[in-house]
Image 1 (cartoon, rainbow, N blue to C red):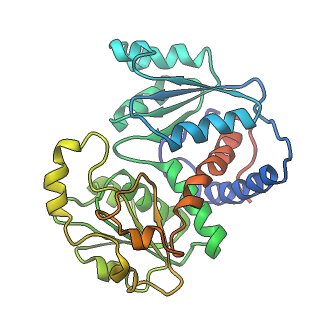
Image 2: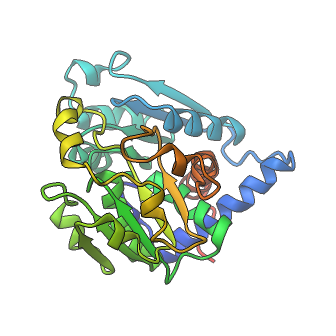
Image 3: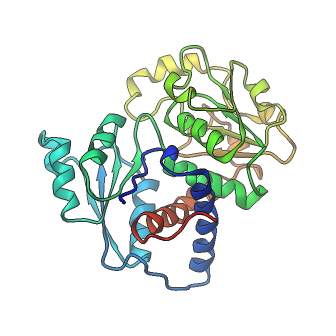
Length: 304
């Protein structure tokens, strides 16, 4: 059966926990110099309608280290950029590659592609969700602090795609999520309805109170550049700085999916502090996605 990964809800809680442990194992194998090529002669098509550093490099490196290949396709390189229907692209790519990773705007586009693809489709990012980043975040938390089940996470900032995926993560991994966003920038109501341990707040300090993990993201995501000035005004007071972190637990850690704007959504004093694990978080994109690719393409069991 073809399995897709469009949101965290496409896998079971047990499978998602298994991916954490497998990602840690694969990371250790790489550090030890052990060759592991479960995807030899497999090809991943990477369709990018939104540019990226971490998504492209991590998936391309993962396929190379697994013995396979990754093919980068921008709108300039495909007929998608000239109006070919998504359904037709899905049918064609499925006959030539073993999986498709898509980084795009509308979530409906990746859902349509998955409906017509006969190979696994992976969400590298849409305007609604960013599940691959959550795999890396959850692995990073586990490495630094152990299981996240029963912990408290504070999301401070825009109720964007990352926030939506954190809502799913709170349900799948079993933690409490407090979301502090300005009025008018809450997460999607339909996604919020899928959460089970989510509280909406307007005060970053209250969201961070006794939190184990504090997370934020840029105030204006790709495609929202024209809103940047209005968003800066709306998000004034929502910077994750030392004062906000002081409300969290003394051993709380800070995450950001990057790129970051120091002096806007996060202060330099926080992102560059010992509490920040953003570089491990970014590096774990490689290992978490290796675990995902192995699970989807090689049939490796993720559940433990």
